[in-house]
Amino acid sequence: MSSVFLSSSQFPIFCNTTTAVSATKSHRFACQVSPRMSMNQTTPLDQQSPNPKTFLSTITTLLWGKSLPPGLLISTVRTTWNSTWQLMMSQLAPSDSSGRYTRPASKFRLNPPFTLQNSTILHLYVGLPCPWAHRTLIVRALKGLEDVVPISIAGPGQDGSWEFKDIPISNKDRNILVPGKDNANGCRNLKSVYGLKRSGGYSGRATVPMLWDVEKKEVVCNESYDIIEFFNSGLNGLARNPGLDLSPRELKGKIGEWNGVIYPNINNGVYRCGFAQSQDAYDSAVNGLFTTLEVVEDHLTTSRYLCGDTLTLADVCLFTTLIRFDAVYNVLFKCTKKKLIEYPNLHGYLRDIYQMPKVAETCNFSAIMDGYYKVLFPLNPGSICPVMPSGCEHEVLNTSHNRESLSSVNKTMHVSVA
Image (cartoon, rainbow, N blue to C red; front, side, top):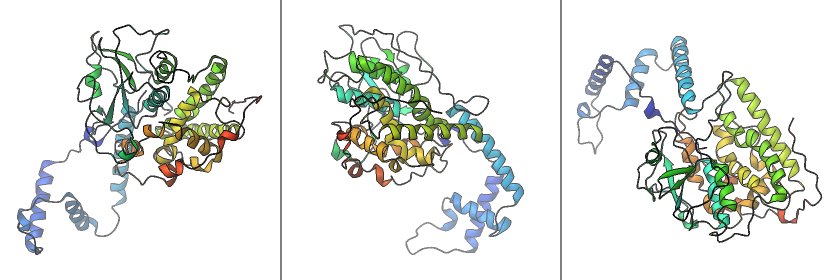
């Protein structure tokens, strides 16, 4: 699954041409009455391009001075905006009749056991803001599959699609991953890559992560959990770290149990909060989210990872949501009851995983915040990106966590959520 983006370019604002022309003439007349020019100005004021903000300021001053707009105008704009918001949200985040966000299912799944043919050349498409794509990057890095499965990193475009282009991003001094070009097919956007499918093409949702067969020009899979399971065990003959098993047989039951709690309430729970289209839908989602965070916080008091002393795929899945929590979900998705940094065990657990070799390089906070605040127009119409919380800074995430001292031996795990 991927994050889905929308922008204002999909909803242009139409106006009456006659009204616009009349306003332009009024603005020019006002400039002629008060011909105030700066010392460096070379173009007469009546020949300059009108400033939209000046238009609005002039019109509102003439209509109602320094007072607030009339109540009728406010209610009309409110009703219009609410209707437009509902329309945009229905495209951005499909919901059921009660306004609860309903995540679309992935189209391309791996059919186990998936085996590589001798001619198979794999390529991974990802987007840095997306927590589901982030999972695949972490497992790929931990297993040492960088040479086996090269990547192309897309960035969110203004029309909401994933695009390939060079985007200047800071923090390059830490070898952090950054968006770039399509290294497998040379396409300008991910939709075009999906359209290259030899077996009939594809016109559906172009999501990340997506595993691509270069030789066959086919989508292998675009379900994140299928991909990380495959990376964990399906490429051991080519991996630099084949001994690492993030899903050992003896822990599969516990991993599944934790995933069954974390996915609906935390991974998807933050989206159910942010994309809720009714108060009841939001209240239900936010209650489930913070109840589950408290359960995990309590569990991590005596257990280094979710399943004891061993890092598993369940931890990877939880981490990619937690690393975005204070920077994005707490503010933009209205997950405001508590910040992650207020949970000492969860934040220590986050730092523990962040400090593992090669994990920090997959965490590009500039790209993450831009991908949400500047592109999810229905949630942030002004596209203003706030300053990054101090708890998300690299120096803070690198502070000591002391979680290696914990042991989960003989611990009975309870993960039920009320």
